[in-house]
Length: 300
Ligand SMILES: NC(=O)c1ccc[n+]([C@@H]2O[C@H](COP(=O)([O-])OP(=O)(O)OC[C@H]3O[C@@H](n4cnc5c(N)ncnc54)[C@H](OP(=O)(O)O)[C@@H]3O)[C@@H](O)[C@H]2O)c1
Image (tube, rainbow, N blue to C red):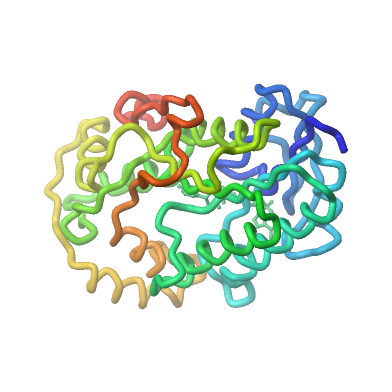
């Protein structure tokens, strides 16, 4: 085993690439595992980063990707199901395959990334699959640590970009009354937490729910973005039943702009609990959306 080597499955993605940066900053060597070969920008010349072409659906790929590593992080995502690719394939079977391979190869650490709100009883297949993936990862690798972030923001994120896109409409439709509470968290703060949890010190908690310093309603976040863009727009409450009907119609499109799974997520507060591990336990002070918004989203 190479004691400082961490494999990051999905290390080319939005969160995964930040995890790779944080691991390198912390002195680790990193093996990125993903289907397309790529190295996060700024690390092209970094000798301690290697890429391993691997699909989380393939036993041999996964075994090769974890071989000789100290730990592995699962940052693979699937947000929208396709006819030949189900949530369970990635979030449940993928999590099982990775945790089992890590156990068989004698790794010390498995970090499974999930999300706040993961729930086996949810009407959403996505939210159920996230909860099942957590359980399976911990069954296959009993010391696996689960990290559940709230919604992520940072340069190039989809969350702020979509909100900014709404600012060009004459009237902005709200999800319900826009009162769902969220705890937006900077992608690099989550990445730092994950780098720490992958290291040599065993995590103190089996689950970490991580949110930023401010709990804001969807309406308040929208107001921040509008203000940042110098826009004023009327906000129109739209019942969730109407959104579900629209998402049902959009489901026939190859790339639907909105899914029922996203609506189920937006119907529940997305706020870190008090009984899990936290940023404070890791000695990390997360930055606030309001402070770093100018670094994440252009004003035009
Ligand atoms: N973004 C958020 O606001 C947010 C909030 C809470 C939790 N999370 C969680 O954070 C994790 C990462 O999300 P993200 O937004 O960073 O995702 P992302 O940007 O879509 O990146 C996904 C990564 O997974 C890889 N991948 C996809 N399918 C794969 C497969 N079959 N085999 C191997 N690699 C595969 C992709 O690379 P290839 O396509 O090249 O394989 C890519 O590197 C997910 O678990 C997500 O649910 C995200």
